Length: 265
Image 1 (cartoon, rainbow, N blue to C red):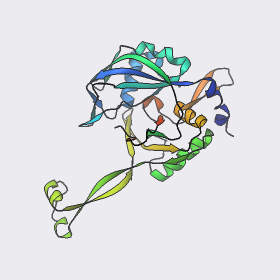
Image 2 (cartoon, rainbow, N blue to C red):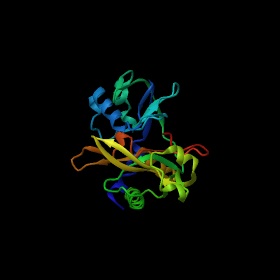
Image 3 (tube, rainbow, N blue to C red):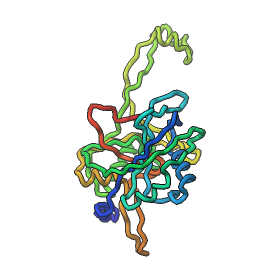
Image 4 (cartoon, rainbow, N blue to C red):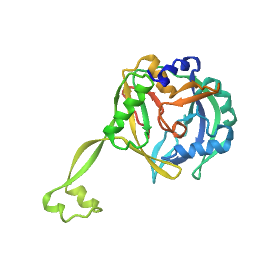
Protein backbone atom coordinates (compact mmCIF):
# COMPACT_ATOMS: atom_id res chain seq x y z
CA UNK A 1 0.00 0.00 0.00
CA UNK A 2 1.29 3.46 -0.83
CA UNK A 3 2.02 6.12 1.76
CA UNK A 4 -0.94 8.12 0.49
CA UNK A 5 -3.28 5.17 0.91
CA UNK A 6 -1.98 4.59 4.44
CA UNK A 7 -2.79 8.19 5.32
CA UNK A 8 -6.41 8.11 4.11
CA UNK A 9 -7.64 7.10 7.55
CA UNK A 10 -6.63 10.56 8.75
CA UNK A 11 -9.38 12.01 6.55
CA UNK A 12 -11.93 10.47 8.90
CA UNK A 13 -10.54 12.62 11.72
CA UNK A 14 -10.47 15.75 9.54
CA UNK A 15 -13.88 15.75 7.83
CA UNK A 16 -14.37 17.87 4.76
CA UNK A 17 -17.34 20.22 4.36
CA UNK A 18 -18.93 21.95 1.40
CA UNK A 19 -19.21 25.69 1.99
CA UNK A 20 -21.70 27.54 -0.22
CA UNK A 21 -21.71 31.32 -0.58
CA UNK A 22 -24.85 32.77 -2.14
CA UNK A 23 -23.89 35.00 -5.04
CA UNK A 24 -25.40 37.73 -7.18
CA UNK A 25 -24.21 38.53 -10.68
CA UNK A 26 -25.27 38.59 -14.30
CA UNK A 27 -22.71 36.62 -16.26
CA UNK A 28 -19.13 35.41 -16.24
CA UNK A 29 -16.70 33.60 -18.54
CA UNK A 30 -17.46 29.92 -19.00
CA UNK A 31 -13.76 29.23 -18.44
CA UNK A 32 -13.54 30.90 -15.03
CA UNK A 33 -11.76 28.51 -12.65
CA UNK A 34 -8.47 30.40 -12.57
CA UNK A 35 -10.29 33.76 -12.55
CA UNK A 36 -12.23 32.80 -9.41
CA UNK A 37 -9.12 31.57 -7.63
CA UNK A 38 -7.23 34.74 -8.51
CA UNK A 39 -10.11 36.95 -7.34
CA UNK A 40 -10.39 35.06 -4.04
CA UNK A 41 -6.63 35.30 -3.52
CA UNK A 42 -6.79 39.08 -4.00
CA UNK A 43 -9.77 39.45 -1.70
CA UNK A 44 -8.42 37.13 1.02
CA UNK A 45 -4.63 36.85 0.61
CA UNK A 46 -4.39 34.28 3.41
CA UNK A 47 -6.09 31.77 1.08
CA UNK A 48 -3.53 32.08 -1.70
CA UNK A 49 -1.44 28.94 -2.12
CA UNK A 50 -3.02 26.91 0.69
CA UNK A 51 -3.02 23.18 -0.08
CA UNK A 52 -6.43 22.40 1.46
CA UNK A 53 -8.65 24.69 -0.64
CA UNK A 54 -10.92 23.43 -3.46
CA UNK A 55 -13.16 25.81 -5.43
CA UNK A 56 -15.94 24.47 -7.63
CA UNK A 57 -16.86 25.97 -10.98
CA UNK A 58 -19.97 28.17 -10.87
CA UNK A 59 -23.00 26.74 -12.65
CA UNK A 60 -24.90 28.80 -15.20
CA UNK A 61 -26.57 28.78 -18.59
CA UNK A 62 -24.75 29.23 -21.93
CA UNK A 63 -24.93 32.88 -22.93
CA UNK A 64 -22.82 32.96 -26.09
CA UNK A 65 -19.35 34.37 -26.77
CA UNK A 66 -17.74 32.12 -24.17
CA UNK A 67 -19.98 33.36 -21.36
CA UNK A 68 -22.51 31.81 -19.00
CA UNK A 69 -25.49 33.57 -17.44
CA UNK A 70 -25.87 33.32 -13.66
CA UNK A 71 -29.33 32.25 -12.43
CA UNK A 72 -31.28 35.01 -10.70
CA UNK A 73 -32.02 32.72 -7.77
CA UNK A 74 -30.08 29.96 -6.07
CA UNK A 75 -26.66 30.71 -7.53
CA UNK A 76 -23.75 29.78 -5.26
CA UNK A 77 -19.99 29.72 -5.10
CA UNK A 78 -19.10 26.37 -3.55
CA UNK A 79 -15.81 25.63 -1.81
CA UNK A 80 -14.63 22.38 -0.30
CA UNK A 81 -12.40 22.57 2.77
CA UNK A 82 -11.50 20.65 5.92
CA UNK A 83 -14.04 21.48 8.62
CA UNK A 84 -11.42 23.07 10.86
CA UNK A 85 -10.62 25.61 8.10
CA UNK A 86 -14.20 26.84 7.74
CA UNK A 87 -13.44 29.97 9.73
CA UNK A 88 -10.69 30.90 7.27
CA UNK A 89 -13.35 31.45 4.60
CA UNK A 90 -15.44 33.91 6.61
CA UNK A 91 -13.59 37.01 5.32
CA UNK A 92 -15.08 36.30 1.87
CA UNK A 93 -18.64 37.05 3.05
CA UNK A 94 -20.01 40.17 1.40
CA UNK A 95 -17.00 40.58 -0.91
CA UNK A 96 -17.17 41.62 -4.56
CA UNK A 97 -15.08 39.52 -6.93
CA UNK A 98 -13.92 40.70 -10.35
CA UNK A 99 -13.85 37.77 -12.79
CA UNK A 100 -12.31 39.06 -15.98
CA UNK A 101 -14.38 42.23 -15.93
CA UNK A 102 -17.54 40.51 -14.69
CA UNK A 103 -18.48 41.19 -11.08
CA UNK A 104 -20.15 38.87 -8.60
CA UNK A 105 -21.11 39.66 -5.00
CA UNK A 106 -20.88 36.96 -2.32
CA UNK A 107 -23.39 36.57 0.48
CA UNK A 108 -23.17 34.58 3.72
CA UNK A 109 -21.68 31.07 3.77
CA UNK A 110 -23.50 27.87 4.68
CA UNK A 111 -21.49 24.74 5.54
CA UNK A 112 -22.81 21.23 4.91
CA UNK A 113 -21.21 17.82 5.46
CA UNK A 114 -20.41 15.66 2.47
CA UNK A 115 -22.70 12.70 1.89
CA UNK A 116 -21.57 9.39 0.36
CA UNK A 117 -22.89 8.29 -3.02
CA UNK A 118 -21.90 5.23 -5.05
CA UNK A 119 -21.50 7.27 -8.25
CA UNK A 120 -19.66 10.58 -8.54
CA UNK A 121 -19.01 12.99 -11.41
CA UNK A 122 -16.32 15.63 -12.00
CA UNK A 123 -16.91 18.28 -14.67
CA UNK A 124 -13.18 18.47 -15.43
CA UNK A 125 -10.14 16.50 -14.29
CA UNK A 126 -6.62 17.30 -15.50
CA UNK A 127 -3.50 15.15 -15.31
CA UNK A 128 -0.24 16.59 -16.58
CA UNK A 129 0.92 15.18 -19.95
CA UNK A 130 -2.26 13.13 -20.47
CA UNK A 131 -4.38 14.72 -23.21
CA UNK A 132 -5.82 11.69 -25.04
CA UNK A 133 -8.82 9.77 -23.74
CA UNK A 134 -7.53 6.22 -23.28
CA UNK A 135 -4.16 7.06 -21.69
CA UNK A 136 -5.95 9.63 -19.54
CA UNK A 137 -8.40 7.03 -18.21
CA UNK A 138 -5.51 4.72 -17.36
CA UNK A 139 -3.83 7.59 -15.50
CA UNK A 140 -7.04 8.22 -13.52
CA UNK A 141 -7.09 4.54 -12.54
CA UNK A 142 -3.51 4.76 -11.28
CA UNK A 143 -4.33 7.90 -9.30
CA UNK A 144 -7.21 6.21 -7.49
CA UNK A 145 -5.14 3.08 -6.86
CA UNK A 146 -2.49 5.28 -5.27
CA UNK A 147 -5.03 6.39 -2.66
CA UNK A 148 -6.58 2.97 -2.19
CA UNK A 149 -9.88 3.93 -3.87
CA UNK A 150 -11.67 1.04 -5.58
CA UNK A 151 -14.18 1.98 -8.28
CA UNK A 152 -15.31 1.55 -11.87
CA UNK A 153 -14.40 4.54 -14.01
CA UNK A 154 -15.66 5.97 -17.27
CA UNK A 155 -15.24 9.04 -19.43
CA UNK A 156 -18.78 10.29 -20.18
CA UNK A 157 -19.62 11.12 -23.77
CA UNK A 158 -21.72 13.79 -25.41
CA UNK A 159 -23.59 13.38 -28.67
CA UNK A 160 -22.56 15.83 -31.37
CA UNK A 161 -24.00 16.27 -34.84
CA UNK A 162 -21.70 15.59 -37.80
CA UNK A 163 -22.77 17.08 -41.14
CA UNK A 164 -22.49 14.76 -44.16
CA UNK A 165 -23.30 16.25 -47.58
CA UNK A 166 -24.57 14.43 -50.66
CA UNK A 167 -21.66 13.56 -52.96
CA UNK A 168 -23.03 15.69 -55.78
CA UNK A 169 -22.88 18.87 -53.69
CA UNK A 170 -20.04 18.12 -51.25
CA UNK A 171 -17.26 19.38 -53.51
CA UNK A 172 -19.09 22.64 -54.25
CA UNK A 173 -19.93 23.69 -50.71
CA UNK A 174 -17.63 25.84 -48.62
CA UNK A 175 -17.12 25.18 -44.93
CA UNK A 176 -19.04 28.31 -43.99
CA UNK A 177 -21.99 27.69 -46.32
CA UNK A 178 -24.44 26.82 -43.55
CA UNK A 179 -27.51 27.29 -45.76
CA UNK A 180 -26.49 24.58 -48.23
CA UNK A 181 -25.30 22.37 -45.40
CA UNK A 182 -28.71 22.63 -43.77
CA UNK A 183 -30.62 21.95 -46.99
CA UNK A 184 -28.47 19.15 -48.35
CA UNK A 185 -27.13 17.34 -45.29
CA UNK A 186 -27.85 14.22 -43.32
CA UNK A 187 -27.14 14.60 -39.61
CA UNK A 188 -25.51 11.66 -37.87
CA UNK A 189 -25.23 11.48 -34.09
CA UNK A 190 -21.65 10.70 -33.07
CA UNK A 191 -20.68 10.32 -29.38
CA UNK A 192 -17.52 12.04 -28.21
CA UNK A 193 -15.73 12.30 -24.88
CA UNK A 194 -16.31 15.45 -22.83
CA UNK A 195 -12.89 16.94 -23.48
CA UNK A 196 -12.32 20.21 -21.61
CA UNK A 197 -9.90 23.05 -22.23
CA UNK A 198 -9.21 25.28 -19.23
CA UNK A 199 -6.99 28.35 -19.10
CA UNK A 200 -4.49 28.58 -16.23
CA UNK A 201 -1.80 31.28 -16.07
CA UNK A 202 -2.65 32.12 -19.67
CA UNK A 203 -1.97 28.57 -20.88
CA UNK A 204 -4.49 26.04 -22.21
CA UNK A 205 -4.73 22.80 -20.20
CA UNK A 206 -6.54 19.72 -21.50
CA UNK A 207 -8.84 17.67 -19.27
CA UNK A 208 -11.87 15.42 -19.40
CA UNK A 209 -15.10 14.92 -17.50
CA UNK A 210 -14.92 11.78 -15.34
CA UNK A 211 -17.58 9.54 -13.77
CA UNK A 212 -16.77 7.02 -11.03
CA UNK A 213 -19.09 4.20 -9.99
CA UNK A 214 -19.46 1.39 -7.44
CA UNK A 215 -17.78 3.33 -4.64
CA UNK A 216 -17.96 2.34 -1.01
CA UNK A 217 -19.14 5.04 1.41
CA UNK A 218 -15.60 5.54 2.70
CA UNK A 219 -14.07 5.85 -0.77
CA UNK A 220 -16.88 8.14 -1.91
CA UNK A 221 -16.26 10.58 0.93
CA UNK A 222 -12.51 10.45 0.33
CA UNK A 223 -12.87 11.21 -3.38
CA UNK A 224 -15.30 14.05 -2.65
CA UNK A 225 -12.90 15.46 -0.07
CA UNK A 226 -10.25 15.30 -2.77
CA UNK A 227 -7.21 15.26 -0.50
CA UNK A 228 -5.69 13.42 2.44
CA UNK A 229 -3.95 14.83 5.46
CA UNK A 230 -0.25 14.02 5.72
CA UNK A 231 1.91 14.42 8.83
CA UNK A 232 5.39 15.38 7.64
CA UNK A 233 8.61 14.27 9.29
CA UNK A 234 9.17 17.80 10.57
CA UNK A 235 5.83 17.72 12.41
CA UNK A 236 3.98 19.99 9.99
CA UNK A 237 0.64 19.04 8.48
CA UNK A 238 0.09 19.05 4.73
CA UNK A 239 -2.75 18.08 2.40
CA UNK A 240 -2.03 15.85 -0.59
CA UNK A 241 -4.55 16.24 -3.40
CA UNK A 242 -5.81 13.24 -5.33
CA UNK A 243 -6.09 15.34 -8.50
CA UNK A 244 -4.38 18.64 -9.21
CA UNK A 245 -5.69 22.19 -9.67
CA UNK A 246 -8.56 21.79 -7.19
CA UNK A 247 -8.42 25.49 -6.31
CA UNK A 248 -9.15 26.24 -9.98
CA UNK A 249 -12.23 24.06 -10.40
CA UNK A 250 -10.56 20.81 -11.46
CA UNK A 251 -10.72 17.35 -9.88
CA UNK A 252 -13.83 18.06 -7.78
CA UNK A 253 -16.39 15.23 -7.59
CA UNK A 254 -20.09 15.47 -6.75
CA UNK A 255 -22.82 12.81 -6.42
CA UNK A 256 -24.58 11.91 -9.64
CA UNK A 257 -28.30 12.66 -9.41
CA UNK A 258 -30.15 10.13 -11.50
CA UNK A 259 -32.38 11.25 -14.37
CA UNK A 260 -30.77 14.67 -14.53
CA UNK A 261 -27.85 15.92 -16.62
CA UNK A 262 -24.45 15.42 -14.97
CA UNK A 263 -22.92 18.43 -16.70
CA UNK A 264 -24.26 21.85 -15.73
CA UNK A 265 -22.23 23.89 -18.16
